[in-house]
Length: 293
Image 1 (tube, rainbow, N blue to C red):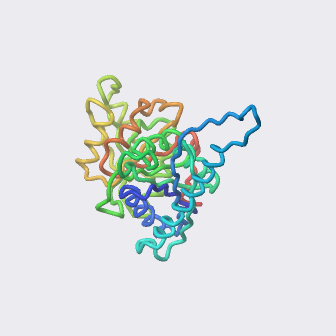
Image 2 (image 1 turned 90 degrees about the vertical axis):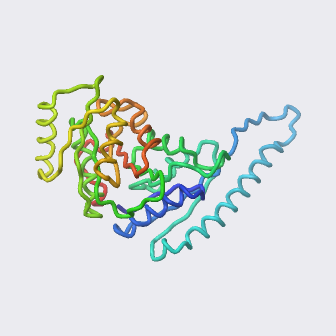
C-alpha cells in the first residue's frame, strides 16, 4: 500500500482507528493521511430580487473558514502524537453537510489504497463521525475499508476470519485479505455460514471451499457454521476462534449479490467488537492485490 486514509472527528473512537492505521503504516511503510470533515447544515440561498448581496452566503463562508482553521489546529496536535512518530503523515480537512460522501471523494483525490476509521463518535453533536458514517462509507466505498469499533487489544492481528460463500467473486478479493494478513503473518480461517433461509448442502459447500482453498495454496483452515442469521454466525464463530479481524466482501451501494443480504456488512460493522475489513467485490473482480503496490 502507498496511502492509508484515516477519517477523524477527534473522538476517542477515531483515535483508536488512527492507532490501528499507524500500526499498518509502520509495517508496510505507507503514508497516512488524516482527514477531518466538519459537518455543516444544508443551506439554500435565493438571490434577492432587489439585488441586495447574499449576507447568508458570506456568513457561511466565514463559518466554514473558522471551522477549517480550528480543525487544522487539532490535526496538527494529532500529528504530534507519540504513536505517529517516524511515520509519513499528511493532514487535511473540509466542511460539508455530507460527511461520508466528502470522505469518499477525498479518498479518490489522494488515490487511497485503504480507509481505516473508527465506527462511533463522541456524542450526539452532528459535526462528529457517527456510527452511521462508517456504515455509509462501507456501503459506498470502492476501496477496502477497515472499521475499528473499539481499541484493539492486539495491534498485530494473529487470526483473521474470511467469511464468504466462495463463489466466483471471492477469488477476486481474497488476495487483498491475504496481502493484509501477510503483513502480520496472521492465520486466515475460511468461513461459510449456513442459515435456514439460505441453506446449502454440506457436501456442496465442502467441495466449493476446498476448491477455493487449493487455488490459494491449500493452507487455510475451513469451517462450515450453522446459525439463525449470517451476522450471528460470523460474529459467533469469530468469538469462538478468538479472531482479531473479520474480512468480508460487499457489492457496495447496489447491494450484496449472493454473498450476503444488503444489511449484513453494515450489521457486522454495527455489532462487531473487533476490526472488520470490507472489500468491494466490483473493484476487485480480478486477482489483483492492492497491498503489493
